Length: 613
Image (tube, rainbow, N blue to C red):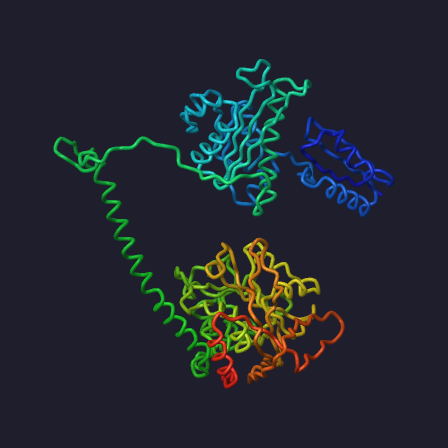
């Protein structure tokens, strides 16, 4: 059997310290380990014939080394930084003093770095720091070129001048003779993202490093600082402090008519130069006026478009008259009622409807978020059009979960009304979603309502529907239900924005449903709901008041009791679900008790029968 090789690279510890830390992991089995490295950049080479054992040892090493591990391939530290910048869609600008361009040289040695690294400044003199990086002269005089305040000012200045997301600076005494009141090897580095800054103070002269070794060590540590920030993002790397970054000062220009308007004595060329900004301002104002007019008409325009699309979809006569003469013009298996819509836009992928609500729209196929801000007709629109997050095939529902995204426009159009699912009374009245694809019809029973942050929302597509996923959904749902969900079931996630409602950027409301025909279902408030980290609990301390509600897709019946036992979402892995007791009760928070009483009475008399086929 041929030998297999695994390479792991670490930064921040010398090779001897790495060997001591991994001594028990690397001994006692048929895997050969070789450690070698320069200064704090260490490479571990694992060799063995048993692939499974080799992977197991590599995983143990990775767990043990934790943040010191930067690559599981033979990749340099600079290459890892460029890879992370590209992955996170960020850019970096660097200001160097004592390293004299070593950081920029390491980055530019990586192919493709120009997409993420565009500005590198070697500001070796105080005059250069002041003029190019806007370091205040008073800062240089008071603290010196090698100081924490100077490093902070350099990082801010290079970030601003480079129009970059991140600014990195480094300044220090590389020796051999100190030029200021600092010993050789004193280095300050600062990384800023505009909101926080991370300052490092290193003492690199251990008696074994010469001038070049100090410069190389400082450059590597600065790159590792950027690497750790990017690996932690979007979480915040520890050790940072808040800052209010200010734009570097610029010389003010007095306002005098002769400076801004043509006057007698100006040549034709100078007059044109003065007129151009005013012409641009006029064009900008006209364009803004047109945009504001179109924006004011956008709600009516979108409403008329959606009404027209509904007419085409629901009218039996309409789609019957549009039967094609040659069915081969359409995808095989396409349902007839989609043909008129398909003629208008072949991107149509389905139809979503929640009975007795305004949600009644075509759903588009996935095109890299195109329909987040484009209408069914392909025109730019603030309203967009609901869309699937992945392509569908006729063999659906094999691709579960199915995710539909739509905009919360906060004007009762598109998915605005989904925010009403934060109220349990609304959930009881509208427990069913109809979602049809081009090839089949389906009804979906809502079993959970979650509030997620942006990072959690991105993970929805990775849900496999196994028991652990279903348990996580139950824990994060605002409400408990008795809907039985198994790993074999098809799941639907309907997602919209909830930033304004919850006061957090990237907040999303997610309605979770399972493909299911008419079933009885009851809901209760989940007082122990798990909200996104750092948000705190959604629930407020109120006195539970009522009610047990059992809902079907045809009628809603409400029974009032005085007990307050809550039901929980039934998640089935092998055993059949347990039927809920008629004595189970649920509680409901309310800001206005009288309005809740009115809603309950109206719910008792409401017939939720679906009148559409």
